[in-house]
Structure formats: C-alpha cells, structure tokens
Image 1: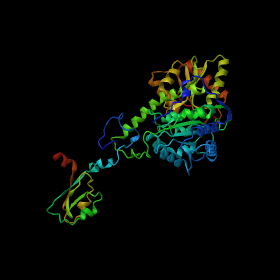
Image 2: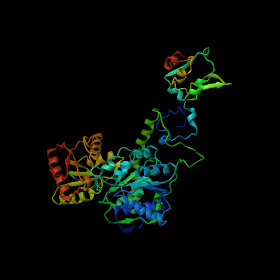
Image 3: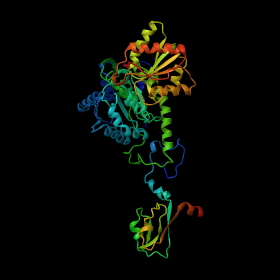
Image 4: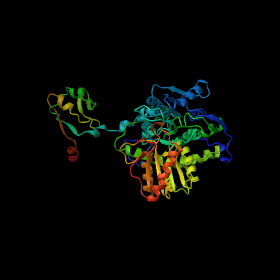
Length: 408
Length: 102
C-alpha cells in the first residue's frame, strides 16, 4: 500500500478553510465528495439519509466518479462494500439504527477480513418502540465487531472525522473498518458554521488507496473469506487485537497531522476544564457541548467541574482515560445506551475496566441519559455535577445506575 | 494460510485469514476427520464396483476397471461402502486404534 503524504502536511501553517453553513450530514457528504470513494453502497435511513441523498446528487452531477450502488437493504450495502473492498476499492457506506443492526453480521465480516471500509453514522435509538431520535444503542450493538468507533461532538468534527477515518482505516498497521458517527438530529440535522478544507487539500490528505492484496490482482491470486479450522481462528482474531492497539497511535498521529493541515488537532480524548477538576462528567458525542455550558455555570459558582469526552470509543484509550481521571474526587459516566442486566452501561464498563487496570480507585457513578432523543439540558447536567460533589465528599460510589431526567 | 500445516505464530500469518497460495485445498487431507476406517478383505471383493458408485468422497481407487484400494487421505469413514456391498468385504474399524497399532 502506498499513501501519498502531501507536501502541505510538512508545513505548520494551516490551509485556509472554506466557511460553510451546513448540518452534520451535509458536512459528511462534502467529505465523501472530496474523498471520491471508488464505491459507495447505501440504503437511506433516518437520520443519516441526508448524507447519502446529497452524495447521490454529487454522483448524478458528475462531481464524483464513485460507483454508487442504491442497494435494497443495509445488509446488501455492507455486503457490497465488503465485495468492493476485497476487490481493492475504497468503499464507504452510511447508516443509522435499524440499518446498522441489519448490517450486524456483515460488520464482523468486514472487520474479520481486515477491509478498510468507512461507515458514516448518525446515531439513533433501536426499536421497539420506534424512535427516530438519538441515542447510542445502535452503535453500541456494533461495539465488539472489530470496527473502530469515533464519536463526533459537532458537525465540524463529523466532517474532520470523515476524512481522517479513511486514513486511519487504510493505515498498514490498522487495516480495520471505521465507524465515524455523529448524534442523529442534534448534529446530523443542525446547521452550524464550520470550515471545509479546500478540495485539493482534502484530496491530498486522504491520498490514493492501493490495496496490498486484492481479488482483481490476477497475477497474485488470493482467496478471501475461506473457512478455517480451530487451528487458525484464534490467531487471526489476535491480529485484530494488535491492529486495535496500533490504531490508538495511528488515530492520535493522524489527528495531529490533520491539525497541522486544518488548524484543528484531535486526540483520542478531549478534556474541558479537566486538569484541576474535582468532579467530572465522562461521555461520548454531542452532549459534550451542553456539558461545557454546565461546567461554566458551576465554575462560576466555585465548583471545580470538568468534562472528559471520549472521541475514540474503539480502540478505548485506557492509558489516557486513567491519566485524565486519576485525581478526581468523583466521576459521573454518562451513557446514552442501555446494557440491560449488565453491571453498568457500555461506557461505564470501559471506564471501570480502564481505571481498574491502571490501579486508579475513585468514586464512579453511572448515569443513563438522553435515550430516544431525551434532552439533556445544562440544568440537568449541573445537577449531576452537584451530586458528584456529594459523592466526592462521602468518598463512596453510588452503586445503582441513575437515570437522568427520568419521570419517577 | 500459505499451506495446510502453517501453524506459525499470529504475528507471521497473513491478516484476515487470507489464502495467498492458489489451489492449496489439495494439501488439506480431509481424511483426517475419520473416526472409523474401512478395512477390505480382498478375498471377498468381487470388483463389482458398487462401493465406487456409492462412495460420496470419490475415495475408491480404481485400476483397470478393478477395485485397487481406498484413498485414505480423503475417506471420511462414513461406512456407506460397508453397508452397500452385499458380500461385506468392508469392515469399519476404529481409526485411533489402527493408528496406535501402526
């Protein structure tokens, strides 16, 4: 594989961005246009529809030369991406909620075959009952599939992630598919002022993908997706563990490289007023924006509140999380997903494991919030911080899972 | 996997279970699965070739239109030959025991 490293990246002065008023979906479709993937296969589903709707316009207008497959289902969309990627193509798709659930078995195939597909997501609750609004239960269902998962806070980051995801997936040390997701409606349908890279700079950044082995390379024939005996599967899955470990460095490195290009650097995690914080909230996605407001409110009252946002949920940045939280008096882990019957919701489980592995023992409380689009207002988040103050004073975790804004 | 007995470490195997050599299924001896081995009493064999017709794994070896033995690299020990051939020239015997006895 050869990925062209553009000259622009060795300079320290960012290229001039193009100010735009776009929602998160449109921003991602712009990144898709600039990436110009060989194949895009998708089936529209709310709230990710705009991404593929806009992209199909670019196809119709001849602005990209992607092979666009309007398939009959999400299962087919992922399967077509798998076939295309195995043939050496740069393949992308788009989905949400039930669509992602319908892709589920093929997600494991994409990761197991080490195909660097990029899936642009817009989070939405899973049925039943039907809800078209945001929570993270859909992407949490794909948590263990071997896909890298990046959660954007806003449309700007969704756009930036859409470009970086291509490079991360195709890195020779990684070669895993990437799910780059944003919160449905809150980000996907909210127009914000953001900056796009100029087309040439974006294209240079994503570079050209040359698959190391491909089905169309007739001089070096391969078999993809063969059956293996018990003597092999364990080792092949072990390789994926290594690839995920490698991805930690790659995500951070590409986040820096992208920063030199755009002026916007990204790490595995992001803190806000965290260094000297006594109490902290940890979460994924767009509620980080609201939490910043709550942090400012509490800081004005003299409470040392802070935020830790996890950008890379898979791979999970164990070292960085433990380092960021080790001195906190109490930490609230906010999950926008259920894991019924579990000891904690998905993010909480990872935070607990990470801290335990690094020997960090601090009071932790798990909150489930924002399910099915339930609003998480600054006042509610401020209450969480206030509860954490009490927890920090007592030094005792609250064992039961709390439900934010639940009518009792 | 590059060949049938590539039991190298996870660090050196091709990623994704990619098979990088063409036609390597030839090297995979599916007869390894066998628990029972057909053993032939040639005195009872009439070369009727009923075993050859019924064998689902094409493991009956033929020379000059006559029964010439069993391809044990591919025979899975299903025992159809032992059931279908009327004079019962085939006897299904314990594979592990036969291997232990050499």
